Figure 1 (tube, rainbow, N blue to C red):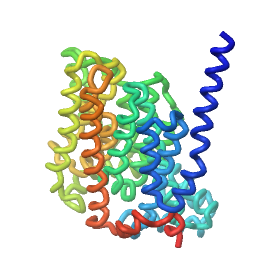
Figure 2: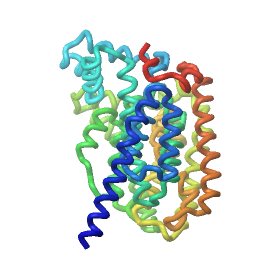
Figure 3: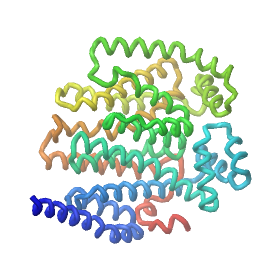
Figure 4: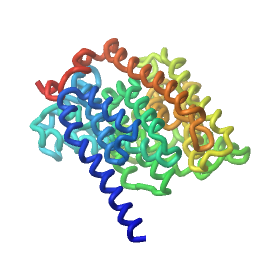
Length: 415
């Protein structure tokens, strides 16, 4: 018995040392060329060359940092220019005056002020830290989710890559930055709620005080009927509850505006109250059909998976949550609240890494042979990466050239 125990300890040390042994070469390689380094780390994970959670965390950190580096090359226009101006204002105001000045959710500006002071007003560092932090938090959440539902390296890596290189979400992260960051926190919250039955209440406070739109998501997390497969009774309760909520929401917003004297809360409430006016301005609604293609495609995968009777019960919370979210967005479209549809599409995109891999999963195992799964996953990942870089080069927002993004050392981003 003692010999067996000693062998287990020795094996764990060998695995740990294996991961530690790769750490310095990986970091040095990353300083030369981040994309090639990331590919190398993926190879180590897929081939099981290093069987340690640490290698996954290194992978997520390096990938998140790379996305932050890319965002740091974005030319400050539109909302991103506003974020830069707000960030630089931290050099002119005291901490309290800075937080009060914007009359918006304060936590984001507390973070901005801290970054400004620590990194001497570097907007490059602001870009890297804000974008990388959000992505890293999301990656960790995706990892925990798939470790629980199907502990297969290829599915974990696939889910991470299709999310990392989904250019719609990346574009929003440099445009609707506060909302995306609060959404990344929500991902972490809902994964812990689903898997570990834990309510991390402090994350609700932080996320809502970064962007108040996330409050709707957190509120929906506590609908009891979402915990199990939907039957006719639960569907009726959900439908009636949603109709009642939508019916009184307008009155509730006006009431809160009348009694509230909290600046950042009033800002969010006034935005909701004026939504119809936004629909005919910078967001014309032309992308409504395209947006629907995204979320109905995800819905199709969910319905396809819903027919599988051998899923772990925890997955139905996620499936049902998505269905409710789609109903809410369709209500926005029907009511011509297209600005709200645009805003809530950000929340739709976060379901991609949790739902799309179910194309290859059945009964808690791979649906197809490993070779077949690998083939189709490779095609989808390469397609996502190709679309990502093409999107950067053709976007109305200007980033560094694709050649530079693929070849630059991280040092070059600061020159």
